[in-house]
Length: 104
Image 1 (cartoon, rainbow, N blue to C red):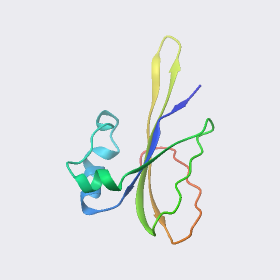
Image 2 (cartoon, rainbow, N blue to C red):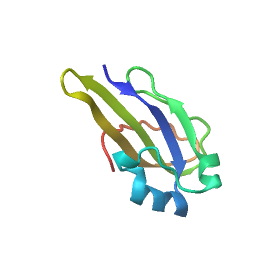
Image 3 (cartoon, helix red, strand yellow):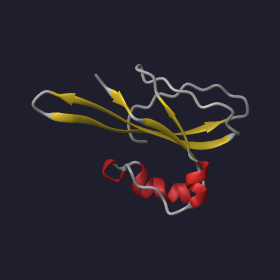
């Protein structure tokens, strides 16, 4: 059975863009964060349900990086999966459905 990790939402800023290009979409760097207190304070997190659905509420209009890990165990092969990422633009009051299906 697939296991969703925490879903993260990071506002797109100069710092987050640099981090995203260097590490944010790379599996081996999945636990890294840029050395920015502002980045850490701005990050929002939620947990997906068993079907992978999640919701962030009361977002200001803007651009965001959305990211999670999806893993599962295959007998005799170990843990499989990887990062699922997306860059999304949100308008004021918008309800948006996002399909995380790979690194973008």
